[in-house]
Amino acid sequence: MTAYKDRSREELLQEKSVLEEKFKEVKAKGLKLDMSRGKPSAAQLDLAMGMMDVLNSETDLKCSEGVDCRNYGVLDGIREAKELLADMTEVSPDNIIIYGNSSLNIMYDTVSRSMTHGVMGSTPWCKLEKVKFLCPVPGYDRHFTITEHFGIEMINIPMTPDGPDMDLVEKYVNNDPAVKGIWCVPKYSNPQGSTYSDETVRRFARLNPAAEDFRIYWDNAYGIHHLYDDKQDNLVEILMECKKEGHPDMVYKFCSTSKVSFPGSGVAAIGTSKANLEYIKKQMAMQTIGHDKLNQLRHVRFFKDIHGMVQHMRKHAEILRPKFETVLNCLKHELGGLEIGNWIEPRGGYFISFDALPGCAKDIVAKAKEAGLVMTGAGATFPYGKDPQDSNIRIAPSYPTPEELAIATDIFVLSVKLVSIDKILE
Ligand code: PLP
Image (cartoon, rainbow, N blue to C red; front, side):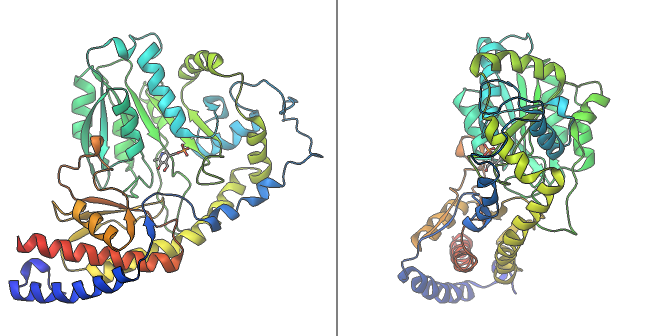
């Protein structure tokens, strides 16, 4: 396949007219397709329907410590839920608090508490002139909207295949006391699907922050979300690394079962040092008498243990893998060699990240929409919704059926080709 940039104007115009015909045909079908949000499909949700049966009117609803889960009590989660989620996030059950149904909610709460009350005795961020967060880009839009909401200045940190550019991270964190945090999705990242290397994690643990209240916001949302049995990414466990380096309090790990059981009805947790946990619990005691213990119990009785969860994730992978492969094969087949876009083949997670020619992402998303395909808004993967290159597009293959996905990807590549030709001809 000859790269578009190496074709003559006439050749490109000819290609364009063929593509425009094809585009007209799909547009005429009046399709309604959505590749925008990383939601599990109905078939994936069906996998956890057994959870509806594990608790019924006959069930003993006492947890392992003898507490009646129907009643008030147990601020930080029942023991067996702590054990399950601790295994999921590779920390000790003594280093975990079980919250409610959403890890994003914990992250918001964590930033919010730091704004109003500070971090373990430090000045509340709202009293400081400037508070900054580092944001590896492209990244998860909802992280960025939390920090934007609190008026925190966000600094873009480019992602490399090994994780965030650690030279820059070290430069900011170790020298600027206004830098209080960094958003990280360290495994099967949203949107690249890549995993931080061992060296990157170790460099995180070796940071020497200028701010005593600097924390790493380690959102391991896709920690057990592999697509393959034989090709899996490994992530070094950061809480222990930080402890080894003499910074036991430097990291908050977030996780949830949103994409294991039911998004919005799962169980979420924070894993961190005991000192951080004690500080958090003081505030939590003002917020709630305890989270939903019946849901915690339901999850434990359904999965039993981490082994049960891992088996369950294999079933998710069976459904997700062909979808990812449909998209990846189409990208490779239709765009390979044209030099109008790059992407990474992820081994897990929920996304494929596509980098178009600079200045093309917005137009590609708009073009796809013309033919009835909704993509994540261009720019959404950057703080303030501003992609300086206007290049990154997040593809979420999980929700459409395989048939819909094949058509959606065809529309996407058509849109990429048409917009890229116009760009080259400009
Ligand atoms: N973190 C990341 C990186 C995500 O991609 C998502 C959902 O897409 C979430 C957190 C949301 O998690 P939860 O449902 O636990 O709030």
